[in-house]
Image 1 (tube, rainbow, N blue to C red):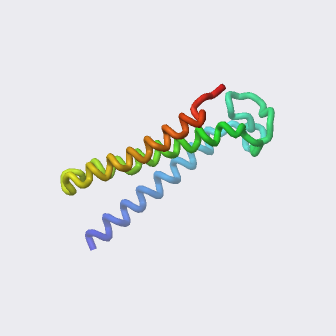
Image 2: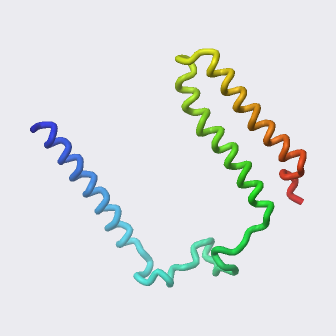
Image 3: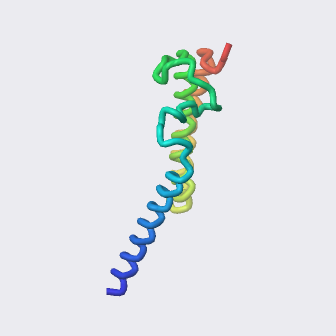
Length: 116
């Protein structure tokens, strides 16, 4: 029963924290009308629709970002298990990095990194 009391008290603290955050956001709001606080990007009125099209060059930048983001997603767990797995983990990571490097070099050769 002692463990259940600890779980219920932790649940109560968590619920109070969530309620406190909601109360603080309600108290700090500027207006009850959401349209009154619409411009949030540096306080400027929007000049184009929110789902307007981006230049095609941004998609290449996005793909490069995702490639490097995925690299970091896989490298962190790798650093945690490298000592247990041994040299095979090092070889696998260098193969992974070589594949990513080949992709970046291909994008560079095709001019994807040239902005103008």
